[in-house]
Length: 186
Image 1 (cartoon, rainbow, N blue to C red):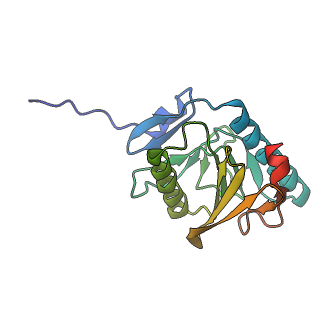
Image 2 (image 1 turned 90 degrees about the horizontal axis):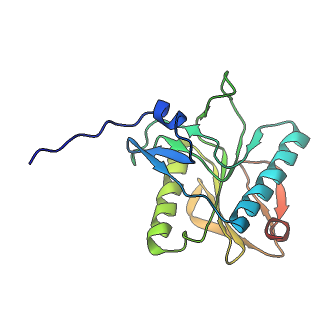
């Protein structure tokens, strides 16, 4: 039986993809839209990050769907598109293009379908990819339990969890930034 080889997708293909997507293993992986609560949580994280970046005159905060292009990782991943992120630079000469390199900080906000065993494995694999690419801190935001699991490249197997009543941070990726968990989930 003959098989037909599929053409390997490229970054140019990713640029032409109208939906939120990432390039993994030569394939464009489309992500479904999110619900109200996860979107608001991601928006609040971005808003706080952006205020901090403006106040300290360092780095830039980004909303959902910004593309980060990285060298092909062992998993085959070539890009990231976190729900909120922070990058200290350098930035592309053409501001219409993706950022080259990984975010220094990435926030992944869980949607309703992110609570299965398969989804847990995918999120763990993605964190591994983030750290291999150079990301310093990844937040895994649990919108049901209303807590933030903070993973650091320096100790990826031992997250710190922040709950309502706590103030979360993303050291060393975003020096000096603090945000209350209550405000993120309000």
